[in-house]
Length: 113
Ligand SMILES: [Cu+2]
Image (cartoon, rainbow, N blue to C red; front, top):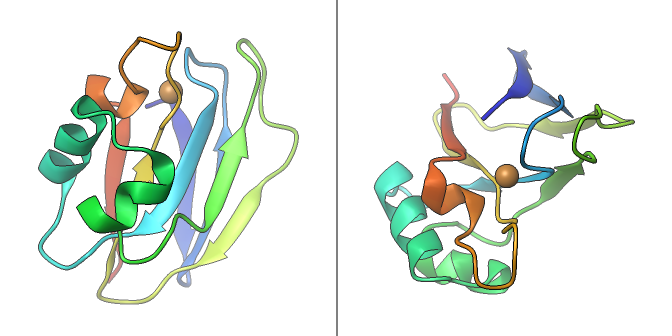
């Protein structure tokens, strides 16, 4: 995942640089869930609205988008809770039948101290 992450004072600023993927979603992970659950759900083609049943605590609450070869025109800033883990995931797919980018490893788990 070629995204630019800045963690400070519990704030996450997300800007997407040029990469094959175009969109990332941020969501709070259920306790005990992690990258394995994200990949398994993506491989099972879980829909975005079904992710809370798989590994998120509530729906994704932030998203960012950039066209291929471009940088996202804005920065999304979210306030993170100390002691929690967040999923930075790409739920896009290149075609209707292609796997979600998260199934291909386009994900990151953020731990906030
Ligand atoms: Cu992607």
